[in-house]
Image (tube, rainbow, N blue to C red; front, side, top):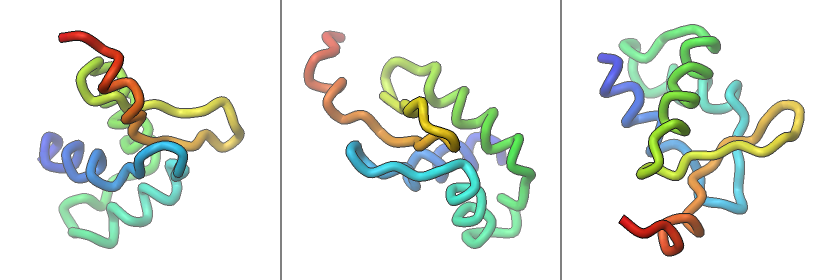
Length: 80
């Protein structure tokens, strides 16, 4: 379930320059499946987990509340 939720969360992230907040992601995730009915803090942890993977290029800005996105510009500049 955790893996499925994280994958679904990743698919909900927009590509940069568009951004979404944790609350927006949480609301969208809850609307998809009853299995994904978790608290906001869990979504924050999942986003931190996704951001820690250098292959997924998930990032957030310094705004309050933070905006989360997939930084596709990093894909071209990051050698494997």
